[in-house]
Length: 170
Image (cartoon, rainbow, N blue to C red):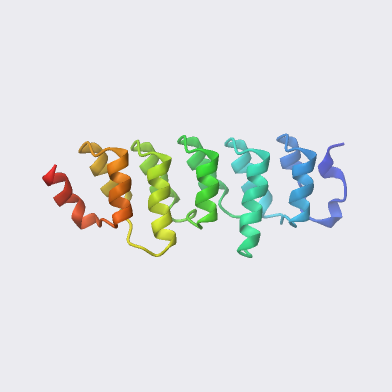
């Protein structure tokens, strides 16, 4: 009998995570964080997409720090599936930049933008600062603007409206 078979009446049934190979210690950490039944399928989605055991626990810790349930399994999975690193996905979660913007972050990754560029933009959004759209960043990349220059322009607070002028100037 797997680790999830113990103490089922104490919380959510973690059998699906146990069946995916989540370690006993990770299952115990999830129990200590009082994982909810609705969160288990969300964690399963993330784990199936390649998230590590520690990443699953971290996502639940991040949600608990905000006093929310973890409900971004699809978003985490989609970002991992387009090649975003686990560390970047976890940083987006810490910045509270998963959810509605996940589709744009996925599109930016598919457009060839690096995790560094995506995180720079997400940090600005999380801080309530103006941030370029994914479409504007993709136009800059297509115009030959390199990553370091892109990061500099993001840090300077370039707006979407200024992108066209920047591209014309190049």
